[in-house]
Amino acid sequence: MSYTRAVKKVPASSALRGDKSIREKAYILIQQKIMRGELPPGSAVSEIALSQELGSSRTPVREALGQLAAEGLLEQTQNRGAVVIQLKRQDIIDLYELREALEVYAIGKVAGRGNSDHQLERLRALAMQIAAMRDELERSKQTELNAKQMQQFIASDLGFHLSLVRMASNSRILKLLNETRLLIRIFSIHRHGHDVPALSRIHQQHSDMLRAVAQMDPAGAMRILADHIQASLQERLDEFDRWEHEASMRETLPVFFDVHPAGEML
Image: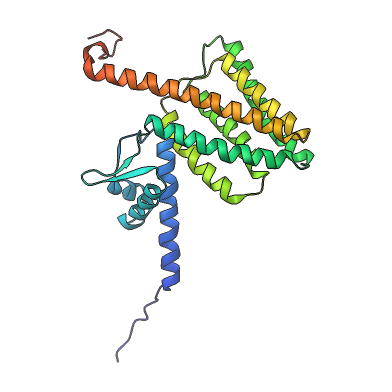
């Protein structure tokens, strides 16, 4: 007597969904590594290491890398594969100009109509988070926010701006701004922590925007937000120039930047 073992076939649609799920996980994982600084600008992204971390084949990882390259977060090179983009000075200017055009339009639309108390309270709570950081910084006697505190600041600041844009009910603008802000944050890995005056200024500008939206003043809201974004652009450009100068000095005079573990200059 012969027996035939039944083989259970996995539907093609299920396999495709599985590959898509792994690709999405790889996509999110790479983004998170870039945002945390684990993959700094200019560093190569290893397909092998990511596939091992995810416990998957290299195919969905390669697809995720291709998607991120298409979105501008990575560059495909002949020798090193995928590399985290290194923004140039003009890139920062271009990104902020795009951000200003989209956000200023969105806040004008939001301020031109009535908004619910719940929406306004959400904005107010996010604005107050920055005020709380300022007050805590004053109490701590620190000169500026540390790296962990800056991550908290970025989350609150991003939450405020994206909440405003969501209120405009335009999903395409929201998607473009998410991608733009993500690119800007790659360079922000280099940024110094905010001090008390900077936090006070940002909190005041957010509060002024909120007031203009609540009072249904589109022109005022658009003007305040444009000034706010232009000031942020100038800060990023100043940081870029300082970072580029320091990088140049490290390259030409490395002896002055080589520090012994105990803190002594070599």
